[in-house]
Length: 160
Image 1: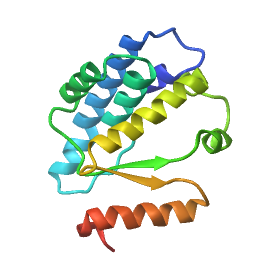
Image 2: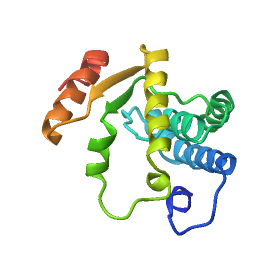
Image 3: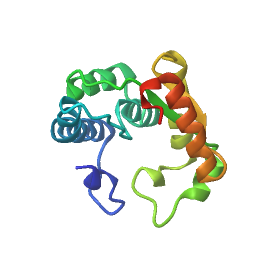
């Protein structure tokens, strides 16, 4: 589903259909990957979870953030993260990191991505107990060290 949604040559998808399809893909991922891993006692690290839908489809596409949140809550069926890491990267830096042809969402332009970025930051500010913001600029090893430090400060059980 996600490949269909991101295909720049694919079908035209409106914002509501996009939100529904992203929620469906997430529900399937929870059922097939996340919930079984958690049941077996494993730690799960995933990207593009509920915050992404709130930022991209809510803030970016202009859908009601509360409605997207309700849809996302239904999709994950109570499987919520203990911690969300937001990598803060200025738009100009993010553009330099893109490789290859932009996907459908990457190609939506500066205004869209500015709304998404603002959305992510407002989500983090509204829930500081769950979200941490990490500087995502610089060399990959430096960013990794900042992430690891921030995560293990919040979740000491993950310390090496």
